[in-house]
Length: 346
Ligand code: F6P
Image 1 (tube, rainbow, N blue to C red):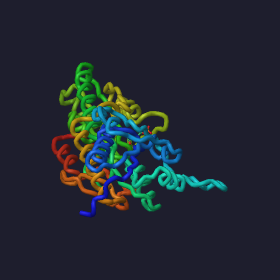
Image 2: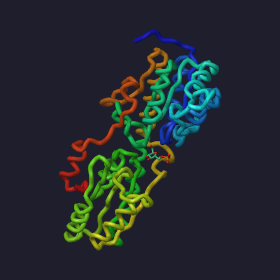
Image 3: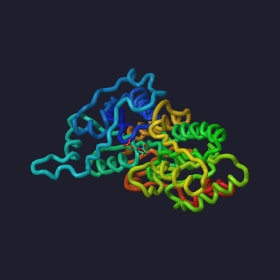
Image 4: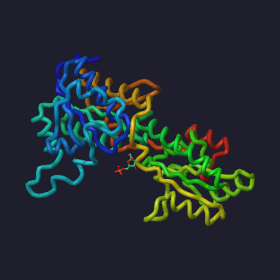
């Protein structure tokens, strides 16, 4: 353990898509910083935009009370990517340079970046520019490389599972095929976990290529076995042959054309990202936040907090940046679901 440095001034921002648990992480960072180390906390507004526009405010311990259970982020967020195409115009100051100047003008000793893959890549590039940075991984997608889990994921899986549970009764009453499309960007984690938790008959994820004929054959087989309905859980990132329709709409039409069975689609959307975090997301976000502040006290920068085998560890941002954690086709859960007869459309 390095020498503990107290009294530092730490900036904190949240960037990328919001998710449940961000405020719990801000609270974990902030309370530990203020109470344990006597540090000052500066909240940057709207992700990296706040660093570019110098929009920030000091946060006291009182500002951190009552936010543990709140969804969204008290700091606001944006998808600003400062390293993308800035500073190319004549006499234009590049955004990374502005961020560096503002970091110094705000008197920051370090910057905590809470975000997903895009944010953590930017955090890494800022560390390369000489800023002291600590990353905290968050996203409902659970696709950050280097950590077993991101907070936001458990809440999203809970919401998606409840939605699938509710589809069972209406599917049964009408004897329909129900297709539900879930978020996850290019990864199938949410669809895989909530598909298993909700008893999906077919689970389609981007990591496993689906074949429409196989899906139709499987659904007809179920119908012939007098199973009155089927639930098809699809990740938003699977192949969509259309440009103007969601993949759930496409598959719903296609399946009913191919099988003659009645089908309906649901696109769950942003509901998966909203509202209060699950208890396990609150705990994970708190563990990440408090550990991030301990790292700052030890001046252990350029790293991201992560979960490995239920231990909180730190991983160099250089190892995380630019990578995505996808579902391996031989993931144990995939194999176990297949062993129980679940189709992955192959
Ligand atoms: O990364 C979280 C996420 O909700 C993805 O699942 C989804 O693809 C994307 O963000 C939606 O982004 P936006 O908020 O920009 O519409």
